[in-house]
Length: 392
Image 1 (spheres, rainbow, N blue to C red):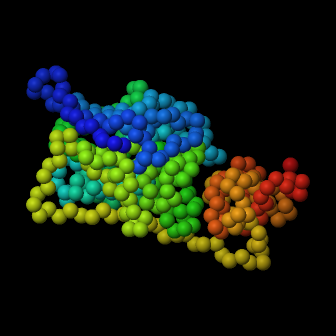
Image 2: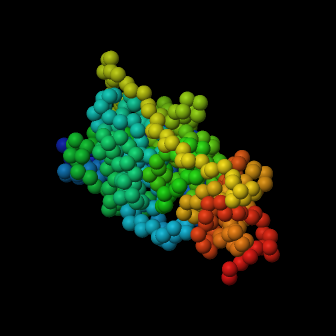
Image 3: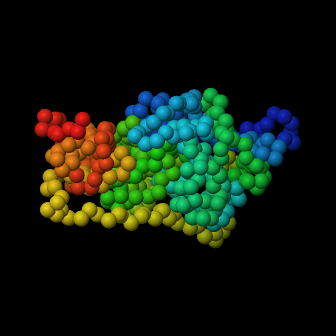
């Protein structure tokens, strides 16, 4: 994003009526730090993740929070995305997560800098948030992850509403004004993040194997190459932001903000607040905490060394839902290569397609399953169907 334009819009219903607060964002900047590419799935359309406007409108003792994107928020009919069970999406949005972090008091040490798990950014600790509103396809499941992964104090200040209303390219919800401490004010600060939404929680096999798994509240990942359920154009780093668009204050750019992460320092990008009425002065001597990265879970136990009963060639190291990790040397197997998981007699248990290649193993997705896949099962890559024993 280049420069975010911030405006205070006065209500036209009388001089004494509270005003709506609006944060606007330029069109066409839904590219993260500059080079992110949309997923290849057919349900994604240009503008789906393009933030255009945040509005907080006083409605008596309620506040209407409305977010407008760059494309119509379609109601897709998902059926199934994987071999897992159906996912019921009843909250208006289906492919986006929209987080709104609000600083209502302007005090540096009175809020939180952590964000919803999986966003891979932090809010500038000199302007921490006091209330967060998360618009997401699966509010109950996301709520569970937020409660389990964020600090208890921060999680208690996160609202994950149901009953979102969609109209064209806008999604809105009404919330009690008391939740924010009163009607919206231009003195408040706002951080608005748009990310992609996944519908099933990913096991993230590669991060687990390299000891870098973090909780994720259904945030679509960003990787080097776009896939049906992943953005492309990112770096293979645990610190790469998964935010596709956001609002930034005058004098800052989206590229600058989202490029501020550091692999060497193990630091996420720091997102500043937007203050429609101007940034309140920081009191002299105020102590500003430093950003703290969320903890990294310990790596799971690694597979036991090969024994006489474990095949010396490609074999299954780990199984999770429709994903398998296969022991295989880099160069012996290519990305998108086909393989068969075999039982002891050579019968085909499953067919798989390779999605990621590492030095000592590959990650593959099961595309046809005929029976349970045991750890240690032999894997044959390539067609070579004539030599396979079938149970058909």
